[in-house]
Every structure is written in structure tokens, then in C-alpha cells.
Length: 394
Image (cartoon, rainbow, N blue to C red; front, side):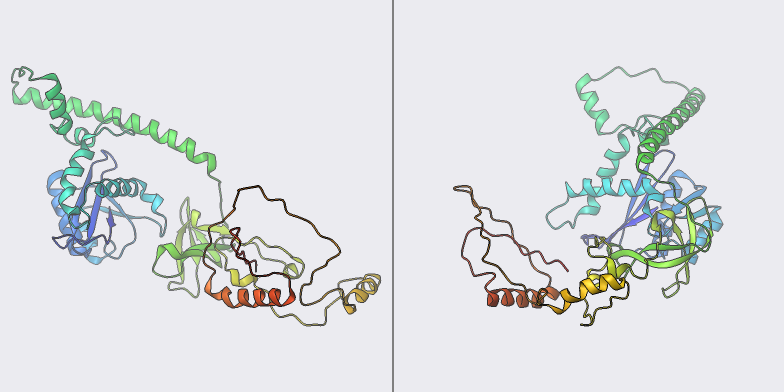
């Protein structure tokens, strides 16, 4: 069970979708909701249970509506075991997450320009989805749930092609029930075998890129967590200490300074922390900035005019000192006229790269550099059609 939204507000005032999928039959159910409060979720569950019965387990994320006292009381009353996914790891409930993507893609093809009629299309789209056989089971969700082919759009199309067929002879109720029970048992066994084969194929593809990782209590790790309420702003934070292993793929990590003192996280959200050496920043000339790292950490800092040469031998210091005291190294760049070269351009070919905006925090530095190079005669204004964007390297 999962909640999709908020989406475009419909004419009925609905802004959320409660999506429920059955792992055994792949049968989906979607309830449009105005709010995702626990009482509305519980009401939708009762509507579903009145048609298909009570489940043994329900898997959800750790949303406040799913973790409420009201739903816990409903689960206890109906004998349902509540299961939770680890935070920020939607792969645990991959079946529902994948159906959410399919549902959104289907809705985009039918909603109006404003998207305010999305809740009116849900019954039609769900009917079409339930009638199509699933690759993992080999049967349609309708057929696995009810034990026979449901007369839907595909059945109507087939009848139109084949024409009206003669009706079969009626059978008594006992024969029908026995036949239905045998058919359900055969379909269940076939579906389980097909599902096992599909999962085996999926595991082979997953294992090609998967890497086994494990952490010991007391080990330092980096944790992928959102910096705010938005999941899109997640980045590696830490280092934090691993407290204990709570499951095959989950660890309890101490997170001091955050909202909660400790969290239970999936191993995919953890990576080993390797401390840097003390003199690494002094000898490193080029550092590849990772996607999640801050660029400001590598901006040049103001250094002292007196260089520390204590790490060199006395002979090396004597060789370096004349270079430092001479005019070889200057603060401003220069240019030479001793060597000239020409750039041969292809005729009738203009190279024009698409320009892009410079970050606001670099605007001042960019203007200072351009003014300096203009004053030194290194560059000059140009109206040529040839152009390339400026690339600032901290």
C-alpha cells in the first residue's frame, strides 16, 4: 500500500491516490482521496476488504498516516500484521512503486489539459490493467482473483471477430464449484511457478551490477539522507557510527545532530567512510569533485606569503629558495611575443556553442578575471560568430 500525490486537484476535490496491490495475484486497487489522513485510509481499506477479504500482511512505507494509532487498532482488530519499508528505500515495495509509474503514464494519455478529471478515468484504466496477463504470473489479475476470464474489452473484441458462439449446456452448482476449485488450484500452482522463474531471471540481471556490502558495529559510514523535507535534496552525510545489524540488509546507525538520534537504514543508503590524510589537501593539485560534494569546499583559500618548506631536505630548500625570491612567479598572468602560432579554421564553418548561465556566486570573480585580462592585453573584445561558454574551474 502506498500514497501517490499530491497531484492536480480534481473537480471532486481529490488530490491523492491510495494504491493497493496484491502480491499474489498482482490485482491493483486505487482509491482517490481528498486527504491522506488515517481515517480516510482506514475507510478505503474496509471497502476493499468487503470485496476480497482480510489480508494477513500489509507492507507500507513509514508515512505518518500508515503509522498512526488508528490503523494499528484496525490491524489488531482484523488480525493483520503491519510491515514497514526502510526509510528512503522504495525498492522494498517495488511492486507498488512500479505500478505507480504505470498508472501515471496511463493517466497522462487520457486526462484533459488541466488534469482535473484524472479520478474519473481510474475505473476504466484499472479495468484495462486487470484484464492483461502479467509477465511474472502468466495470468491476468482478474483471472487469478476470480478464477475465470472476466468479460471485458478484450473479450468483447474477440467476440466481435469470432461472431456469436452457441451457448454451452448449463451445469449444476456443485459441478461448477468443484470445477472452479480445481481450476483455481491449477492456476495458483502455475502462477507460483511462473513467478519463481520471473524472479530468478530478474535476480540474474540484478546480480550483474550488485555488490555485496556489510558493516561491523562501531564502523564509520556515510549516510544518504535528505537535507530537508524534499527527497530530491538528499546527499551523503556523516560520518556516523554503525550501532548494530538489525536484519539481512538493514543497520541501525547513530545519527547525532539530526532529528532522530538513530535510524534503521538499508545497506544501499550506506557507504564506507575513508578518512583523509592530514597533509592530503597540501599535496593534492587536482581533485575530482563528486556529485554530492559541495564546490565551496575546494575554492582557493588565502594562504600566507611565507611558504613552509620544512617537508623538503636542506638541499631541496636551497634549490627552491632562489625560484621563490625571483620574479619568475607573479600574481598576474602575462604573455610572450617570442612564439606565435596560427589557428586554421575550416572555411564556411562556424562553431557556436550554446551558452549557459554562470552561477550567481561566481559572477563577481568572473568579472574581476575578465577586467584583469583585458587590462593586461591577454584578451580583447570580439564580435565574431565563433563562441564558447566560459568554464570556471575552482
